[in-house]
Image 1 (cartoon, rainbow, N blue to C red):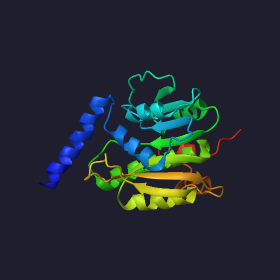
Image 2: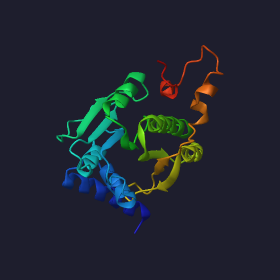
Image 3: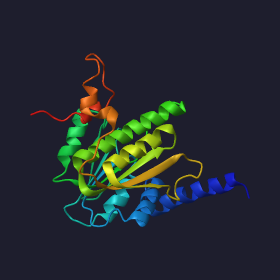
Image 4: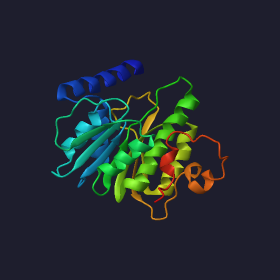
Length: 237
């Protein structure tokens, strides 16, 4: 029995299971397995889902949030077909844009218990470039944690394995006390994706060095920022 055959059967299993159980994507089972392992939804009320389309993670989170005043907010470039649940809302937009960032920050009354990021860029076919672009999205999600996540909240983020992901995990450890690397069974065995599960923001936490304002001010005045950099500057009154 070949490994390829087993791999294809595994993918088919979760695809069919998602259809049978009414989930919009097989990735719903990745989140279910993350929760089974780490109990991230226990006592959670407010959840932010970045890269939410087509909505499989929103469905799972909506089922797990028992508080009638809870909010599960999904953000994606693509429009997400309505999920008919009172606790689900969506925003269509690019999280790298300042207006979208502000809309997200203003959507919650208080702070989020969980921030989840399943974001990935459109693949260009150049692995080093694709991985860096994906990690850049993960760093934007990390900054949202600094602004929006509760001190004991959970951060779940997808990354692609490669040279840049090792640096990113070190950055996570500068932000969180608890950091675990996890690959759900529902992930394809050949996939380079991993999920990092983090909790307990450090009081003395440090953002990734390349996005710290004190470092950015040293750059040339006419340099254009990378999309998403706006979030790494403190607002001025």
